[in-house]
Amino acid sequence: MRSVFHRLAALLALSVAAVLAPGVSHAATGSYERGPAPTLSGIRAALGPFSFSTVTVTAAQAGGAFGGGTIYYPDDTSQGTFGGVAAVPGYQSAEKAVAWLGPRLASQGFVVITIATNNLTDQPTARGKQLLAALDYLTGQSPAAVRQRLDPNRLAVTGHSMGGGGTLYAAWTRPSLKAAIPLAPWHTIKNWSGISVPTLVQGGTQDTTAPVGTYAQPIYQSLTGARERAYAEIADAAHGTFVRENPLIGELEVAWLKRFVDDDTRYEQFLCPAPTDPELTEYRDSCPSS
Image (cartoon, rainbow, N blue to C red; front, side, top):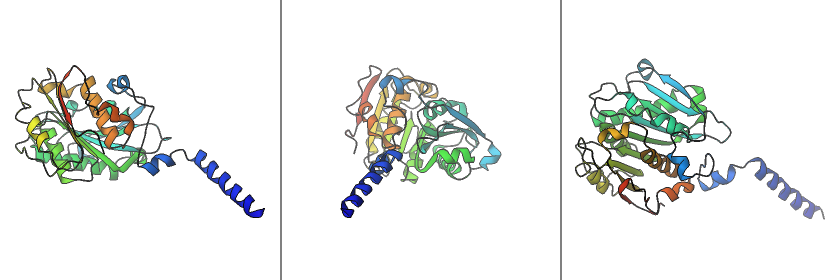
Protein backbone atom coordinates (compact mmCIF):
# COMPACT_ATOMS: atom_id res chain seq x y z
CA MET A 1 0.00 0.00 0.00
CA ARG A 2 2.85 2.38 0.84
CA SER A 3 4.43 1.89 -2.63
CA VAL A 4 1.10 2.63 -4.31
CA PHE A 5 0.79 5.81 -2.24
CA HIS A 6 4.29 6.88 -3.21
CA ARG A 7 3.57 6.33 -6.92
CA LEU A 8 0.35 8.35 -6.68
CA ALA A 9 2.20 11.15 -4.88
CA ALA A 10 4.89 11.19 -7.56
CA LEU A 11 2.30 11.39 -10.33
CA LEU A 12 0.55 14.24 -8.55
CA ALA A 13 3.84 16.12 -8.18
CA LEU A 14 4.56 15.72 -11.89
CA SER A 15 1.10 17.02 -12.78
CA VAL A 16 1.49 20.05 -10.54
CA ALA A 17 4.93 20.76 -12.03
CA ALA A 18 3.52 20.62 -15.54
CA VAL A 19 0.82 23.15 -14.62
CA LEU A 20 3.30 25.48 -12.96
CA ALA A 21 5.79 25.32 -15.87
CA PRO A 22 3.81 25.71 -19.10
CA GLY A 23 6.93 26.58 -21.09
CA VAL A 24 8.59 23.20 -20.52
CA SER A 25 6.97 21.56 -23.55
CA HIS A 26 8.29 24.31 -25.83
CA ALA A 27 11.77 23.95 -24.40
CA ALA A 28 11.65 20.21 -24.83
CA THR A 29 10.77 20.50 -28.51
CA GLY A 30 13.20 23.34 -29.17
CA SER A 31 10.38 25.74 -30.07
CA TYR A 32 10.06 29.25 -28.66
CA GLU A 33 6.47 30.20 -29.38
CA ARG A 34 5.83 33.81 -28.47
CA GLY A 35 2.50 35.56 -28.80
CA PRO A 36 -0.92 34.36 -29.97
CA ALA A 37 -1.60 31.98 -32.83
CA PRO A 38 -0.56 33.83 -35.99
CA THR A 39 -2.89 35.04 -38.73
CA LEU A 40 -2.06 36.46 -42.13
CA SER A 41 -3.60 39.82 -41.25
CA GLY A 42 -1.64 39.82 -38.00
CA ILE A 43 1.79 39.40 -39.60
CA ARG A 44 0.95 41.83 -42.40
CA ALA A 45 0.12 44.56 -39.89
CA ALA A 46 2.70 47.25 -39.16
CA LEU A 47 2.46 46.44 -35.43
CA GLY A 48 2.04 43.09 -33.73
CA PRO A 49 0.69 42.07 -30.30
CA PHE A 50 3.64 43.13 -28.09
CA SER A 51 4.11 46.60 -26.66
CA PHE A 52 7.75 47.66 -26.74
CA SER A 53 10.25 50.21 -25.47
CA THR A 54 13.28 51.81 -27.11
CA VAL A 55 16.84 52.66 -26.12
CA THR A 56 19.21 54.91 -28.07
CA VAL A 57 22.76 53.69 -28.61
CA THR A 58 25.17 56.54 -29.30
CA ALA A 59 28.15 56.23 -31.60
CA ALA A 60 30.37 56.70 -28.54
CA GLN A 61 28.68 53.79 -26.78
CA ALA A 62 29.21 51.67 -29.88
CA GLY A 63 32.91 52.44 -29.55
CA GLY A 64 33.60 52.59 -33.26
CA ALA A 65 32.26 49.07 -33.89
CA PHE A 66 29.22 50.61 -35.61
CA GLY A 67 27.72 54.05 -35.86
CA GLY A 68 25.18 53.85 -33.06
CA GLY A 69 21.55 52.90 -33.36
CA THR A 70 18.24 52.20 -31.67
CA ILE A 71 17.18 49.14 -29.68
CA TYR A 72 13.53 48.09 -29.70
CA TYR A 73 12.55 45.43 -27.19
CA PRO A 74 9.25 43.88 -26.03
CA ASP A 75 7.99 44.98 -22.62
CA ASP A 76 6.71 41.48 -21.81
CA THR A 77 8.74 39.35 -19.38
CA SER A 78 6.15 36.61 -18.86
CA GLN A 79 6.87 34.47 -21.93
CA GLY A 80 10.60 33.92 -21.59
CA THR A 81 13.36 35.50 -23.65
CA PHE A 82 13.15 36.73 -27.23
CA GLY A 83 15.40 36.29 -30.24
CA GLY A 84 17.56 39.21 -31.41
CA VAL A 85 17.80 40.86 -34.82
CA ALA A 86 20.25 43.46 -36.16
CA ALA A 87 19.35 45.57 -39.22
CA VAL A 88 21.69 47.71 -41.34
CA PRO A 89 20.95 50.23 -44.13
CA GLY A 90 22.53 50.47 -47.55
CA TYR A 91 25.03 52.71 -49.32
CA GLN A 92 24.61 56.43 -48.55
CA SER A 93 21.65 55.64 -46.28
CA ALA A 94 21.14 56.59 -42.66
CA GLU A 95 19.64 54.37 -39.96
CA LYS A 96 16.16 55.61 -40.87
CA ALA A 97 16.27 53.41 -43.99
CA VAL A 98 15.79 50.34 -41.76
CA ALA A 99 13.98 52.08 -38.89
CA TRP A 100 10.61 50.66 -39.98
CA LEU A 101 11.83 47.19 -39.04
CA GLY A 102 12.32 48.12 -35.38
CA PRO A 103 8.68 48.58 -34.33
CA ARG A 104 7.43 45.93 -36.72
CA LEU A 105 9.71 43.17 -35.43
CA ALA A 106 9.80 44.17 -31.75
CA SER A 107 6.00 44.17 -31.64
CA GLN A 108 6.08 40.62 -33.00
CA GLY A 109 8.38 39.42 -30.25
CA PHE A 110 12.02 40.19 -31.11
CA VAL A 111 14.73 42.36 -29.61
CA VAL A 112 15.85 44.54 -32.52
CA ILE A 113 18.76 46.90 -33.08
CA THR A 114 18.67 49.14 -36.15
CA ILE A 115 22.06 50.69 -36.74
CA ALA A 116 23.85 53.51 -38.47
CA THR A 117 27.11 52.63 -40.17
CA ASN A 118 30.42 54.29 -39.34
CA ASN A 119 30.46 55.85 -42.80
CA LEU A 120 27.64 56.26 -45.31
CA THR A 121 29.95 54.85 -47.99
CA ASP A 122 30.90 51.68 -46.11
CA GLN A 123 31.01 48.66 -48.43
CA PRO A 124 29.07 45.42 -47.83
CA THR A 125 31.82 43.63 -45.90
CA ALA A 126 32.17 46.57 -43.50
CA ARG A 127 28.39 46.63 -43.06
CA GLY A 128 28.39 42.91 -42.31
CA LYS A 129 31.06 43.33 -39.66
CA GLN A 130 29.07 46.15 -38.10
CA LEU A 131 25.94 43.95 -38.05
CA LEU A 132 27.83 41.36 -36.04
CA ALA A 133 29.26 44.03 -33.76
CA ALA A 134 25.72 45.28 -33.13
CA LEU A 135 24.62 41.77 -32.14
CA ASP A 136 27.63 41.52 -29.82
CA TYR A 137 26.62 44.85 -28.29
CA LEU A 138 23.09 43.55 -27.75
CA THR A 139 24.26 40.41 -25.98
CA GLY A 140 27.09 41.94 -23.96
CA GLN A 141 26.73 45.68 -23.45
CA SER A 142 23.09 46.69 -23.85
CA PRO A 143 21.09 47.82 -20.81
CA ALA A 144 20.05 45.15 -18.32
CA ALA A 145 16.39 45.52 -19.31
CA VAL A 146 17.33 44.54 -22.87
CA ARG A 147 19.61 41.64 -21.95
CA GLN A 148 16.98 40.33 -19.53
CA ARG A 149 14.68 39.79 -22.48
CA LEU A 150 17.24 38.58 -25.03
CA ASP A 151 18.26 35.01 -25.84
CA PRO A 152 21.90 35.37 -26.95
CA ASN A 153 21.74 32.03 -28.74
CA ARG A 154 18.93 33.03 -31.11
CA LEU A 155 20.17 35.84 -33.33
CA ALA A 156 19.53 37.00 -36.90
CA VAL A 157 20.53 39.70 -39.38
CA THR A 158 18.81 41.71 -42.07
CA GLY A 159 19.74 44.67 -44.24
CA HIS A 160 18.99 46.65 -47.37
CA SER A 161 21.07 47.02 -50.54
CA MET A 162 24.76 47.01 -49.53
CA GLY A 163 23.33 46.22 -46.11
CA GLY A 164 21.80 43.16 -47.76
CA GLY A 165 25.26 42.33 -49.00
CA GLY A 166 26.49 42.83 -45.45
CA THR A 167 23.77 40.47 -44.26
CA LEU A 168 25.18 37.77 -46.54
CA TYR A 169 28.70 38.42 -45.25
CA ALA A 170 27.51 38.21 -41.63
CA ALA A 171 25.68 34.92 -42.27
CA TRP A 172 28.74 33.48 -44.02
CA THR A 173 31.05 34.62 -41.19
CA ARG A 174 28.88 33.49 -38.29
CA PRO A 175 27.10 30.20 -39.08
CA SER A 176 25.58 30.12 -35.58
CA LEU A 177 23.05 32.73 -36.69
CA LYS A 178 19.51 31.42 -36.95
CA ALA A 179 18.33 33.47 -39.94
CA ALA A 180 19.36 36.06 -42.53
CA ILE A 181 17.16 38.27 -44.72
CA PRO A 182 18.93 40.39 -47.36
CA LEU A 183 16.56 42.98 -48.87
CA ALA A 184 17.32 44.03 -52.45
CA PRO A 185 20.90 42.86 -51.82
CA TRP A 186 23.92 44.37 -53.58
CA HIS A 187 27.31 42.70 -53.50
CA THR A 188 30.03 42.11 -56.06
CA ILE A 189 30.25 38.50 -54.82
CA LYS A 190 27.46 36.35 -56.24
CA ASN A 191 28.50 32.93 -54.92
CA TRP A 192 27.35 32.38 -51.34
CA SER A 193 27.37 28.59 -51.30
CA GLY A 194 29.32 28.73 -48.02
CA ILE A 195 26.32 30.09 -46.11
CA SER A 196 24.54 27.49 -43.98
CA VAL A 197 22.17 29.91 -42.21
CA PRO A 198 18.49 29.83 -43.34
CA THR A 199 18.33 32.77 -45.76
CA LEU A 200 15.41 34.60 -47.37
CA VAL A 201 16.37 36.83 -50.31
CA GLN A 202 13.89 39.53 -51.31
CA GLY A 203 14.06 41.58 -54.50
CA GLY A 204 11.87 43.89 -56.57
CA THR A 205 10.89 43.71 -60.24
CA GLN A 206 11.46 47.46 -60.75
CA ASP A 207 14.80 47.66 -58.97
CA THR A 208 17.28 49.37 -61.30
CA THR A 209 19.95 49.82 -58.63
CA ALA A 210 20.26 46.13 -57.81
CA PRO A 211 18.37 44.37 -60.63
CA VAL A 212 17.14 40.98 -59.50
CA GLY A 213 18.60 39.22 -62.53
CA THR A 214 22.06 40.48 -61.61
CA TYR A 215 21.90 40.29 -57.82
CA ALA A 216 18.99 38.72 -55.91
CA GLN A 217 18.36 35.77 -58.23
CA PRO A 218 21.96 34.55 -58.65
CA ILE A 219 22.57 35.12 -54.94
CA TYR A 220 19.60 32.90 -54.10
CA GLN A 221 20.66 30.26 -56.61
CA SER A 222 24.12 30.12 -55.03
CA LEU A 223 22.77 29.35 -51.55
CA THR A 224 23.19 25.63 -52.02
CA GLY A 225 24.71 25.15 -48.57
CA ALA A 226 21.94 26.91 -46.65
CA ARG A 227 19.85 24.69 -44.41
CA GLU A 228 16.80 26.50 -45.77
CA ARG A 229 16.48 29.20 -48.42
CA ALA A 230 13.78 31.18 -50.18
CA TYR A 231 13.51 33.85 -52.87
CA ALA A 232 10.68 36.38 -52.97
CA GLU A 233 10.29 38.78 -55.91
CA ILE A 234 7.96 41.67 -55.17
CA ALA A 235 5.90 43.05 -58.08
CA ASP A 236 6.51 46.71 -58.97
CA ALA A 237 8.97 47.12 -56.09
CA ALA A 238 11.86 49.53 -56.69
CA HIS A 239 15.08 49.68 -54.70
CA GLY A 240 13.57 52.23 -52.33
CA THR A 241 10.46 50.14 -51.67
CA PHE A 242 12.41 48.18 -49.08
CA VAL A 243 13.20 51.18 -46.85
CA ARG A 244 9.64 51.81 -45.70
CA GLU A 245 6.77 49.88 -44.19
CA ASN A 246 5.37 47.33 -46.64
CA PRO A 247 2.81 44.66 -45.64
CA LEU A 248 4.18 41.90 -47.90
CA ILE A 249 7.88 42.53 -47.27
CA GLY A 250 7.16 42.81 -43.56
CA GLU A 251 5.02 39.67 -43.56
CA LEU A 252 7.83 37.63 -45.06
CA GLU A 253 10.36 39.09 -42.59
CA VAL A 254 8.19 38.16 -39.64
CA ALA A 255 7.34 34.68 -40.90
CA TRP A 256 10.98 33.80 -41.70
CA LEU A 257 12.29 35.07 -38.35
CA LYS A 258 9.54 33.37 -36.38
CA ARG A 259 10.09 30.10 -38.21
CA PHE A 260 13.87 29.97 -37.87
CA VAL A 261 14.83 32.18 -34.91
CA ASP A 262 11.98 30.92 -32.75
CA ASP A 263 11.65 27.56 -34.51
CA ASP A 264 7.93 28.25 -34.37
CA THR A 265 6.30 25.89 -36.85
CA ARG A 266 3.02 27.80 -36.59
CA TYR A 267 4.56 30.18 -39.16
CA GLU A 268 5.42 27.47 -41.69
CA GLN A 269 1.98 28.01 -43.26
CA PHE A 270 3.07 31.45 -44.52
CA LEU A 271 6.16 30.04 -46.24
CA CYS A 272 5.18 26.55 -47.36
CA PRO A 273 3.40 25.91 -49.62
CA ALA A 274 4.59 29.00 -51.47
CA PRO A 275 2.60 32.18 -50.77
CA THR A 276 0.17 33.15 -53.52
CA ASP A 277 0.01 36.89 -52.88
CA PRO A 278 -0.73 38.74 -56.15
CA GLU A 279 2.14 41.11 -55.33
CA LEU A 280 4.57 38.21 -55.59
CA THR A 281 5.75 37.65 -59.14
CA GLU A 282 7.94 34.75 -58.09
CA TYR A 283 8.59 32.71 -54.97
CA ARG A 284 11.06 29.84 -54.69
CA ASP A 285 11.93 27.92 -51.56
CA SER A 286 13.28 24.72 -50.04
CA CYS A 287 9.84 23.80 -48.75
CA PRO A 288 9.06 21.95 -46.56
CA SER A 289 11.30 23.32 -43.84
CA SER A 290 13.16 20.78 -41.73
